[in-house]
Amino acid sequence: MISIGPLALALERLIAVLGIIIFMIAASWISRRHGKDSDKAAWYALLIGLVFARVGYVAQNWSSYALDPLNILYIWQGGFSPLIGLAAAAIALVLFLRKSSALLPMGLALTGSAAATLIASSLFIISAEQPLPQGLEFQSLSGEVSALDDRKGKPFVINLWATWCPPCRREMPMMVEEAARSPVPIILANQGEDVAKVKEWLDSQRLTSADVLLDQNQSAIAAIGSAGLPATLFVDSKGIIRAQHVGEISRAALLAGIRDLE
View 1 (spheres, one colour):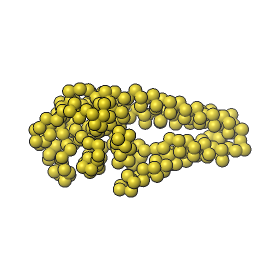
View 2 (cartoon, rainbow, N blue to C red):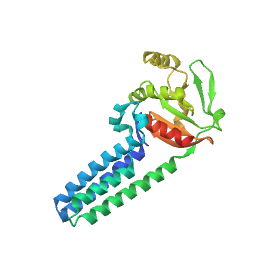
View 3 (tube, one colour):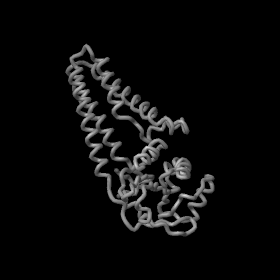
View 4 (cartoon, rainbow, N blue to C red):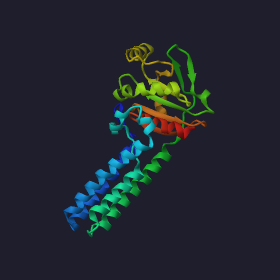
């Protein structure tokens, strides 16, 4: 991830954006040799691909989005199906350029940029897997100590958040709701704030505090190597962080991560 002060940008999203930029640069170069229509076709293909990638992801996770239909519009949370989007973009290119000499080079540009993006994303996901540091201890709002080492042997999720963080506040009602019914424990670890501050905010939002713990020393930040919030870590039964989501997370992404742990 890339951090700017307390904010963070997930590196996998940046990789996807760079992949799109590479394709559009290649498309611009191709259009100078095959006519402006090929450049327009690239833009149409990009738009169609993004729309279908989003629609495909929503369809695959409809049970989650059905609970919060408005979240379909929250594209900043992520949630795109790359293969569906690439297939739609490829079909669009064929339809728009079927009679143009630009079809082959444009197809190669799309294939090359997509392959590079998928490979880079896969390598990032593999490199993101790391052991959860040992010795991490949180406190409940009543002052009881909770050692994460005691949870080894079963999977769990850690959500790092703070009351001053806008995306944390937006996702917290959903996180509290899912934590109350999830078969995999979800720990809502507040970062660096005291009991009074956290209780006051939870009460003001009418949120329950059963799964909220305090990490006043922000020791869990070391688990992801950044101060960016919010962050959600998916830890398997061996204590390995199998996936992490930086930034506001959707219900669909949270439940998908939990399913991968089960």
